[in-house]
Image 1 (cartoon, one colour):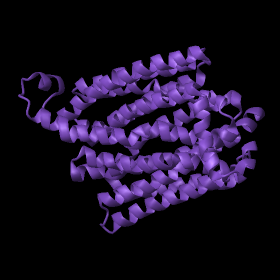
Image 2 (image 1 turned 120 degrees about the vertical axis):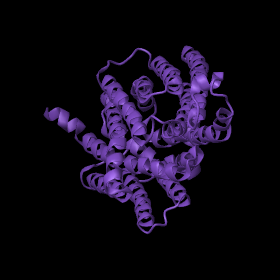
Image 3 (image 1 turned 135 degrees about the horizontal axis):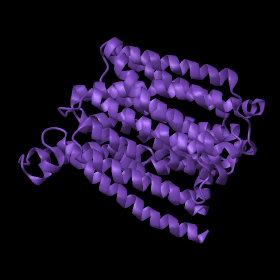
Image 4 (image 1 turned 90 degrees about the vertical axis):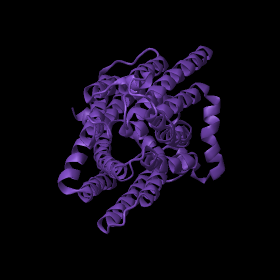
Length: 427
């Protein structure tokens, strides 16, 4: 037991308090999405919240990784978290004074995305440094476990606090969780140095190019990242479409949306436990491909064709159960292949390449619903084939969009599956 505590103590402190802060931030984001959709009724305007968060994150990540390798990682995490908390305080002030508008939310989300672009690679490298290599898969499973709990608890807690105490109370809880995580990191977590820290005097441009050059030499990792970029395009469009599909339906609404999202958390919770307990697979790349094909090939179609919250919840179980298995295997591949002194800049390049499709997906999902499929479904007769498949009224266009995303997701998995198998044969 003493040996276990010595090996895991720092990780457990950092992991648990960061997860608590993540819960607070997720509750605020959930409440703001509800607030904005109720005032605009637009899937695209609601999706712009996430677009504004991810766009700066993607745009500067490739440079942020070099900074994370050059600067003290603990200090980077503290500063970025503080500035992100300041933007949350700004939302609270605007809300209390009655001046909160969509434009304010977009700008503040952009600031949060900018801070995340620097904080994320620093945090990823910190996790590699405080966890022994033999525990990478279990640690990744635990991180998926906490993400699952956040997904489960966010809609339930945010909806409850929103109903009984209002938006400002949700934000105050967010700030309290930030304070706990900040103090834990400041006082109780020490992040070891790496051999790469001696490279802090290297030219900044060379540090930036280092990540890209590494990926160019390791094509299997590059293609894995590009595969996940395709998955993220479909998944982010899904996230933009889901509120527009559930909120306006007669058997939908806020409670239904929260319940459906909570089932995603239940599924990832179960998947995380499997990832923690399962033995190492013989072929991690094959597991990544298979899990994503199952996920994208079931969830989108079930939600598109389903008419009740029960079917939507079952779809979430099928769609999210495999995700932690994919994430754990990808995490082990990256952490065991990339040297720690290069991880900051390579992870940052990964963030740019893998996540640049997320703002595109949010925009695409919202635009397809508002500009194409809702108008198309509004013109359909009640007994027409599209109406029989996707229903009638507001929300039916979102169902049609979701079906199209299912087709796109399967295509991405089949195409990249062939490419990745070919790369493995070359190694």
